[in-house]
Length: 436
Image (cartoon, rainbow, N blue to C red):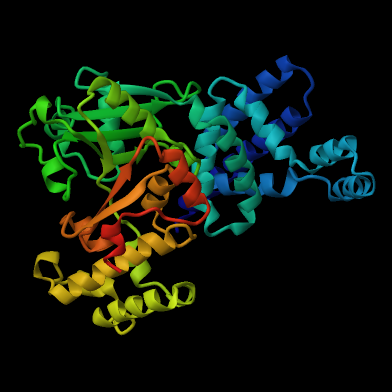
């Protein structure tokens, strides 16, 4: 490294430290400030300082939040003892007050400033990138998650239909944020907004013009079994007289800083009710969903699943794994060079469908379950069908051996199925049960 580079790096570190010191100093003033006027001005300064902070200094900021904005352990212990002795409401309120980290009040005050919500979402996005290698930041993440979960309650979300006449900036965001099936330019997007398609965006009042979620829907005559025909940009739009099924084929989260925050509670039900009012001939609401965690689960340590399964199901699970030689070799290695669903033997096909059925019905309520399955089952859907050779894209083969899933939304039973999933039960059709 040359002397010039060394001097430049040293200068940049000094500037970053100066900016960090200014940010933390303002944060402390904001937490201790009295009066709305003072708080509003200081909150705006915090946002300004954070946005000027170099990305390399974000970690230091989060470490300072983790170390310097905690409850006083002596006060917490004393309050806990008083509550344990008296069990009075006043003692409980005092304990709740002193045990709350000052970080939460800091973030609440930042949120009151113009642009505060967006700044906090940006903070969490940066924190999540650092969290995996810095678990000591877990308490900061818990505070951010707690507050954002309250502020982004699904009841606050506003739903808008997007069509070809929507602002270009919004249409560009659909292309940018499509997370399931990439949109290949404007012609592809135009096809997804034709009369036999629908797209809905969900917004939060504190983030005007910034969509949180996009939901894409295909209007069809039957439940779809493969994604290819739904996203073929040169396909001919269907006749409206044939619309009997609304198939949700893509749901994209546009805000990485809200990852894990439950935005989707009964979200699909809201869209379905809107479609039902518009097109009474539609009686069936379903999805065509990816299975992104399947191959990763196949190659993971299966000791927990082995212990979890009942004896008859465990034998079928083991037989399917033996057929695919899992344990001797990784499914990921086999997929990469040559494997394809259309070339699979009947035995391979049966084994993969058996394992997919077990994965969805047994693992979904656990921490090892598929994220997409958790979303739909948690929203009150029924696991309806597993489709072979449904996604032949490179990503579909890599993640799920080409499998896709239909989840069915029975609007009259969404709340019931949601509750059953919370109790650890996956409601599923007989067609899925027969695979295992």
